[in-house]
Length: 195
Image (cartoon, one colour):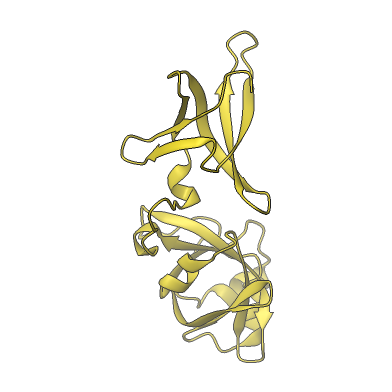
């Protein structure tokens, strides 16, 4: 029996979670998706999506999903309103599509489209060390937040005085971010220790 809550042995080592299935779409087994990025190009650039089921699937859901291929072969995908809809090869049953609700979808990082100059995928920024112009370490990128007009870096650092993990929020805009060096795993910012 296939384990729905853990990746298969042939899972790619560069898999990045990009969306979750929110339900069925249409009568021919289409899927409604909620992408994790406001610009879901990673979904559009790959014709193979890896999936992982949420924990706690019912036996009926497991039975429906037991024939689902790994990876999914994408027949078509497009934006639809605030989300994305997709047709998957060999998935033509609405009940099976509805049983897919909650599936986590992953794409190989190597299949992402090439980012333009000065553009970065969030997944590539996670874990980068952040230093200010005075070469003081501010922490490491733990996450990013979308606030509308721009993104915000969520930087975590350990407060030596208290021993607790603290957080800094730095807008990811040119006025504060001097440089991003993916090879060196480093971001330089115009930001003070006490800002």
